[in-house]
Length: 233
Image (tube, rainbow, N blue to C red):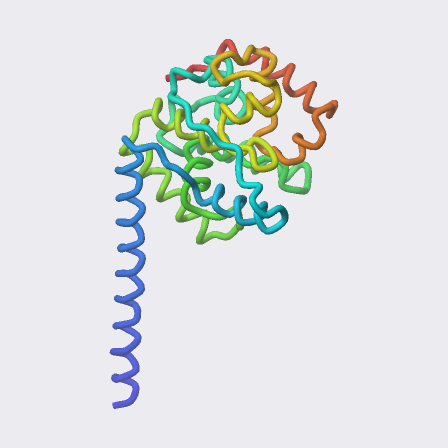
């Protein structure tokens, strides 16, 4: 009798868990549909960073200015695609070949040095999730990535990504980054400036503090050579 009662409770709890996960996915879908037309004012990453900065320096806030796709230099678009996701136009959210190459490279180095995440995956994480590493978080990231790819076109994905990506200490988006590093607008960024900004994306705070990094200069030179082949929407 007790075992059957316990079984019923376990079954109910399992159904509740499934329902909760399903409701969460509908919540994400609702926001993604909204963001197809409405520019997000703040992402999960921005909220976390704002709270951290305001705790250290009350009233400091973030530097973030939204600009439309056409107000961002094509050089920056090409540089970011070349550096972060060369097959951005081709894949449907996840580049499994890039992930395999990253795993092989990490295995040879004996440490995680490459990620293999696409621009769409990075956007999914930045919009809704946290930087913590877990299988649950990664699974949710993949689900959101496919939602975004299904509901947005590539132009919108790149537009939102370039406007919410972290580019330094409290610096978010291409416009704020262009002003912060070069005293210009995102539209007026040249090829060399764009290549440097693209290289900063994996470690924005580090490169904000170490702008004279030899690696930054070398890697930017490499990206500069590949930018001409980068396809953008």
